[in-house]
Length: 103
Image (tube, rainbow, N blue to C red; front, side):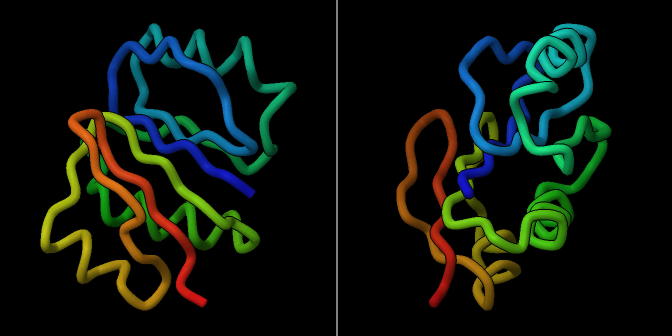
């Protein structure tokens, strides 16, 4: 399962198997338009949420995940060390980063 985690306030891109998206009027409308096509454990989260906590919620709610693509947030040392037992950094871009499950 591929999961998309979006910290951008006005996401207009495509979906994944599951989506966790920061709450904003634009993102809530996007989520509602796509809710029938994404995993039922997908969520809209509070903008004040800590990115590391969001990732751990994704791990918990989607135990079968294989890849997580994060948009609108950069990897930090705190995030990297906080997820190390579950995930490794697959790639980093200006837009975000991608994680792969640790075997």
